[in-house]
Image 1 (tube, rainbow, N blue to C red):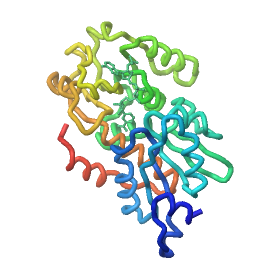
Image 2 (image 1 turned 90 degrees about the vertical axis):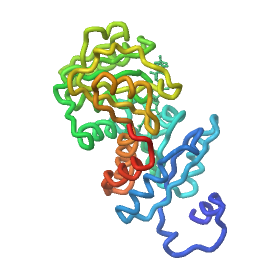
Image 3 (image 1 turned 180 degrees about the horizontal axis):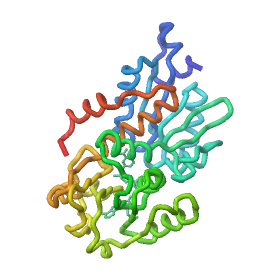
Image 4 (image 1 turned 30 degrees about the vertical axis):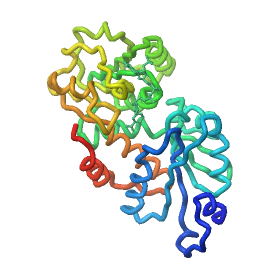
Length: 298
Ligand code: NDP
């Protein structure tokens, strides 16, 4: 197994005994060159003294399942999955965790002799960043979730589990937000939180304590049609994007909110995957700090 792995990685030389002990992981996406996951996981491995190697793997758009099969054959222990393969990862998993079922998508694969387990760590990553790193409780708060794509679906149930007073979902394509609400309503245990879908136009005269941007509008520098009155006093504005100051972040700051980007979520979702694979929870704060030093401040 390990011999094949070394050929795959372009290494054909003899290797030290340590290499035989190394466990291999990957992040699979297309494109993938931008992914920070190898840096994050190697930092976790250093902090926790775990012997792992973590690679970026570019899968062909029509070749995700084959890529996963190849990694398994080479002895990899697991993989993270990013755009555009989270739904395919959900499909190929032979077993799904509850949070993967809730999210309808998988971002973490565990390879076992019995098959592939699919999990989703995005939601717990977001909630941990907000509650533990930023130090803001979601409990009893009025929360606005903007967007109804994969990221929004992934964080919906973990947000509800944190018991906000109300959650409004808004999206450019309103039907997608309405469908998310319908699915929540179909689950009895979530009824203690008021969950509704509103069009952007219907957000006038409403204020929120926490506003989470789960759209990709920042990628194209697009401004979201939000009323300027939307932020309650001391509101938190959280953009899942990271590495750039988006129009949403600039707008939120201009209207009095405290602004955070998605760097902490990225690192927390990775920490949860690392914990699942290794059974050790890394301290995320030095890794968040390392990345903050290297990116423009939000
Ligand atoms: P999807 O493509 O699944 O969904 C995109 C969402 O953005 C949809 O709701 C879409 O609305 C909306 N949208 C896109 N452009 C605009 C626009 N110009 N105006 C208004 N709405 C717009 O993407 P994901 O959900 O997977 O990702 C969303 C964002 O979250 C990305 O920026 C991604 O990088 C980030 N993310 C960050 C993570 C982290 O760890 N920090 C983890 C996962 C995601 P519509 O339905 O109308 O098309």
